[in-house]
Every structure is written in C-alpha cells, then in structure tokens.
Image 1 (cartoon, one colour):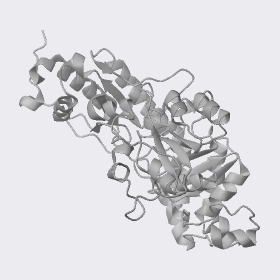
Image 2 (tube, rainbow, N blue to C red):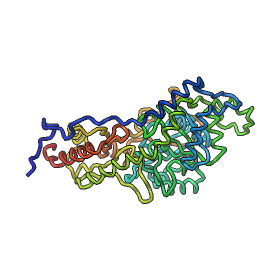
Image 3 (spheres, rainbow, N blue to C red):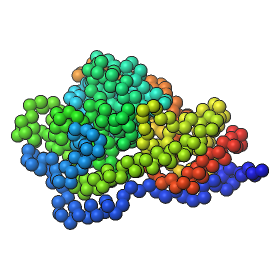
Image 4 (cartoon, rainbow, N blue to C red):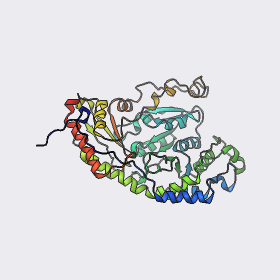
Amino acid sequence: MKVKQKLAIFGGPKAISQEFPLYNSIGNEELEAAKAVVASGVLSQFLGSWHPNFYGGKKVQAFERAWAAHFNIGHAVSVNSATSGLMAAVGAIGIEPGDEVIVSTWSMSASATAILVWNAIPVFADIETETFNLDPAAVERAITPRTRAIMVIDIHGHPAKLDEIMAIARRHNLKVIEDCAQAPNALYKGRYAGTIADIGVYSLNYHKHIHTGEGGMCVTNDPLLAERMQLIRNHAEAVAGDKGVTDLTNMIGFNFRMCEVEAAIGIEQLKKLPRLVAERQAVAERLIAGLSGLDGLRVPLVLDQCTHAFYKFAMILDVDRIGVTRARLVEALDAEGVPGLGKGYVNIHRYPIYQKRIAYGRGGFPWTSSVYQGSVSYDVGICPNAEKLHDETFLGIEMCEHLFPEAQVNQVIDAFHKVWAQLDDLK
C-alpha cells in the first residue's frame, strides 16, 4: 500500500522535484535573420509621408505577406504591439466620440483602452463559462442605439462563439474586432481564429506562442480597412492628402510601426507556429486526461468544431464542493512546485479608471462629454460570471511561461492528486 506523503505546505516533500525550463521559441534561425538585417544597415525603412517607403521595408512587407498567406486572409498590417493594433482597428472602423463599443471585461486592459483612446465608451458584457469568452446573450442585452461595434476576445486560446457574435453584429449593423492575442492558429469551424471578424488582431510580445519581443499583426479581408489601419499606423494626417484619401474620419496618425529586425524574427517565428501550438495542445491533452477525475475541478473544454491554442490551461473550481478556498489550494499547489498558477484577469470594469470615470483630465471625459448621450454602468456585479471567476473559482496554468517535459507533466498531475487526496487537511 502506497504511503501518503505529507503535503509540502506542511513540510512534506514536494511533488515536483525540479524547476521547469522556461518557454523559449527563439532559436538560431531568428539569430541569423536578425544578424542579416543588422549587417544590412537597414533597421527600419518607414517614412511618414506618401512615398514608396510609407509601407515600410522589405522584411516588414515580407512578414505581412507571409502572415496573410498562412492565415488565408486578404491583408495583414504589422504594428509594434497588439495594443497599437487594437487602437488602429477601432479607429479604422470609424468609431466616433460618444459611440459605444461592447467588450469583454475578462481580458487584458488594452482591449478596452483601445476604445477609450478614440473618446468612445467601453460597455462591458459578461462572459460564458464554457470558453470564458463573450456571452452572445449578454452582448445582445448590452446593445443600445449608440452601439457601433463589438470587440470579442478569444481568451486563453479558445475561439469565442463567433457565428453567434457575427450574427448579432449583422442584425444590428455593427462592426466586429476580434482580439486574437492568445489564440493564434486556433480553428473555429475550419477557419483561423482572428480571421472571422471584420478585423482580427494578434500579439507578438514575448510571452505569447511566438513573438518578436514586442509586436502585433492586424488582418482583414477589407482593403479599405487595411488602408485605414496602415494610415493610422504611420502618421495618417501627413499622408492622407497626398495619397488622395477622401474619408478623413480618424485620420489621426501614430507611430505604430514595426522595425525590420522584428519582422525578420517574425518571419522565422511564423514558420514554427503550428508546431509550437501543437506542443501546447499535446501537454494540455495529457493534463486533461490526468486531472479529469478530480472532484470539484473542471478542466478546459474544447467546443465542437474548434481547436484550442492553450495559451492558458483554464480551470474552474467548485469551491463549495471541495470545501477549500482557491487561495488555500493555490498555496498548497504552489508549495508542491506547480508552475504558473494564476487566478485570472482582474475584471477591467473594476479598474479605478472606470470606477472613478477619470481618464482625460479631471472632469470625467469622455463620459461627461456632451457628445455622449448614454448612461453606462460599471458597478460591481454587472458581470457576475467574470466577477465570480476572478474572486473565487478560476484557476489557470500559464502554458507559454514554461516548457512542460513529459516527466514534469506527470509531476504536475501527481501534485494535483496529492493535494486533492488531502483536502481535509487544508480546511
């Protein structure tokens, strides 16, 4: 009979005997590509005027073509971050001051800040607990006469319920931006996540499946939206006249440009994307198989006709059934050596900027602006699913923080089983 080992939190041996190696997608290919760019002396080739170099250098343009080809989409526009990409996307679709844009509260703050930058109003909708993405029913309830767009996030690596979201948008004549920062190469009914909305935005910062240090990519099948994002990316106001742009809406430009070194690295990283995502999926499948029998723990779901990129291994705890708080479970699992544990996102609507409605200056702009004729609530309780997940029940493992060798995946599974076998000792 196997002797029960004391939990590490109480001084027993750790279930995981060594540190996990850090996740690193960069190899010699990227090193050589970057060296070649440095040796060329052309580190960037953008000009903020209507000129052949308005679109950037050879590597930037090659990276955009490669991205569009991989994702089977008409146009790809590189940017210096996914945050910049979201800002360019919101501007490109013609959002105006006082417009409302529905967005998930269960995301990184930039999803909403990209709306606020254009003096529009983020309206937060709740998520469903299958995929942790926007709940289509909550989106429908949030629509008002001032709604102009929906920003849907493919959170943790699983695509949102995109058919339903797109159907709502088309019924109400709304644009859709898909924040696909965490779900590159995930599939939704045979199409890549990020390519289904009017504009999709991907992230290339350092803790994603592939990265260029910092960076992002926007995609669309609409050539006009692509042009508008290119303009906003690169000093639109200085280019629009000479380029012959007639719709000057939001032709306020920024410097959201990607450099040649980043693009050269990105070209090599993109080649590795299918393999790197497949490796995360294989680890997740083993974790699902090993943890599925634990009472009160719901492992990630993958909906029919979808694949999951597993940026995060997202679980839900039934704390009433388990009889132990999430904080205590995390403390016990962390003591056993389980890496990358987290309780999920702070709900964006609970940040001070929204609770106090202070953004531009001290007077509550844009909420107090005369151009905004609505009334939006950021009260605690408006998104009960997302709020309960953050406060009590969500448990995630960061999948792009460490590598998970086979032996250590087994140790993670053993650590969970060890803690679950001694829940009474944690109460």
